[in-house]
Image (cartoon, rainbow, N blue to C red; front, side, top):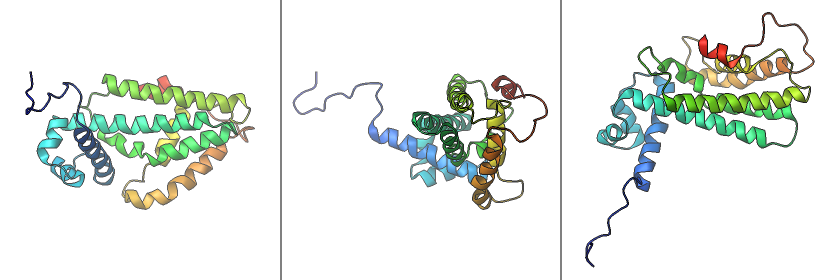
Length: 215
């Protein structure tokens, strides 16, 4: 039992607030540096930007794959939150879809895709859960706009996710931040092409989530 002068024991299994803040700073710094410099940025540089020691990084993330996975899950969670905000909108269904697509582009998830190398566990349970949550919410957003007669019926969740990712990824050989100023302009051109009634027939068929995963 603790004496009157000894501190009460801290409950096990509950991270301290400062530990949680440090972890969040590391993930934020890693996300920004992965986007700016690619997946091979030294972990020491990430620690420096996060304002923590190298030991703190390794205590939270034993290897690079663990940090990459946390960054990807964090970005997908924020993307899912943007979809939930859009679904909560009570106005025009297509406008809500537009708001989500632009918010998702700001998360720069497409710029993080190259980090998933052949040695990376793409089917880790945390990644699978985060991915499925995003896909279900996007499907709900698109379904609502389609039911309202505002979204062309020959597109699927895979179509939206592929094109949004492609348009928000900077062209090869260009600086990420330079390409940013064109992203929302080109996304809006794409979104206008999704409106019903369609001006033309699309070749092929709507891309499903299953096809997107298998491609």
